[in-house]
Length: 117
View (cartoon, helix red, strand yellow):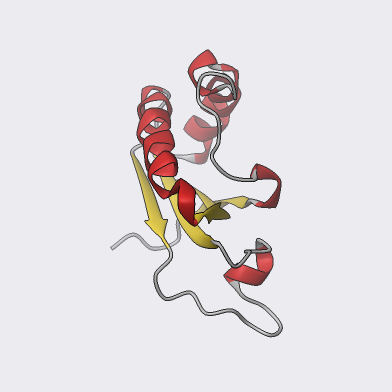
């Protein structure tokens, strides 16, 4: 059964291109370890909420945009076997590929795919 890692984060508007390049550099590494696809979405219609919302969840500032992304794995087992290797890969360390946003405000989680039409 497919498995998805999902992410929500706030990226400074001035870093949009840097974030795109960061993703383009990171995605092939994940694919080497088994990821089937990586999708990065720049917020376009993401309203702030009063109780809950993506902007509230990631403490999005006035000069930032919410990014919603996910990567699909063939299974949770493949993902679990790969994740430690991915994180240890020198191509993804903060010196060779610095994240152009505050990763401490990123929300992430793993999800079992229930329906894949």
